[in-house]
Image 1 (cartoon, helix red, strand yellow):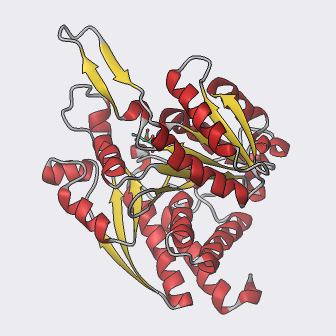
Image 2: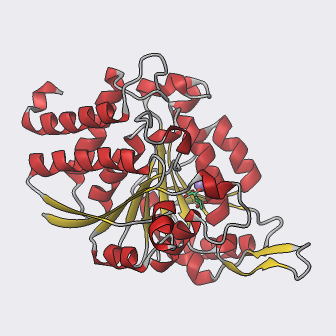
Image 3: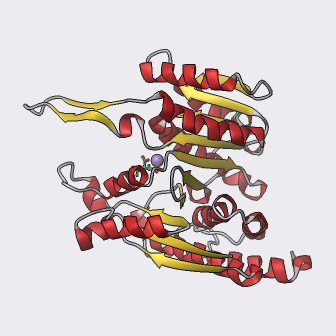
Length: 362
Ligand code: IPM
Ligand code: MN
């Protein structure tokens, strides 16, 4: 197959981890006879520096012409401590989500036996974790209007707003996923306090009636946060709104032991986007210390979800598994004997190639 991929490496560690994902995609290309065309675009602080806009028009056009988007990370410390900055890199991310209609953010969380000892939770609790969060991505308090400051500057406000249609379209995707998994959807909300949450409950409950074989349950966000730590194995598909999903998935990410491991997919009306859930991690940017597995697994998700290349996607996941078993990992997993970002990328690419050419060698 021939596929055109927009590559938006972004800021901080984005470029170095994305480079490893591309390396692994090149290995897939060679091993399985595909052709991937990578086209780079500017986004985030890098784009502000060059164009003044964190998500420039050219980048948007590039994305709309592509078959999928591979994204690195966004954010730069020079904006973090300046509450008066007129443009912020994060605006690029939000604009991109909105303009590309990426309403459904899918974040799978799965533990790896080989590294369960580095989780802050006990291995026996971590080993059962295998769930996926469907986070609504283009609504809620992130985008609601009005937002801003009063004239005297002493009051600020944001608006959390949802329509039934916005809720329904991601609910459908969550149920579809549950049907292929352990058939349980947990809606996470704050329906004891928020009107938007009550609309979520009503809408999801109504929709769920069509699927009697899928168990639907409800959990308040505070209680879900607790359950996630106590018994992550409880969850199968978690469905939730934008901000709750943001918070819950950061918490969920450490269950596996490292934030650097987790991929995500954002899907919607047009082209889909794939990105590691970690941020730009400026403290180590350029030092080749960051874990590229989140980015590499995002490429695996891209092959599966956007191109229906299931075998190829599984080959990447198997190679990642193998590299973890070998202990071929970055410092977040093994601080005493770490490999570099490049070395881990090279190793996984080699394992993908070898896995196809010499299946017995795995
Ligand atoms: C994420 C990030 C973003 C979000 C930030 C950078 C705006 O935390 O993708 O989870 O809050 O959505
Ligand atoms: Mn986040």
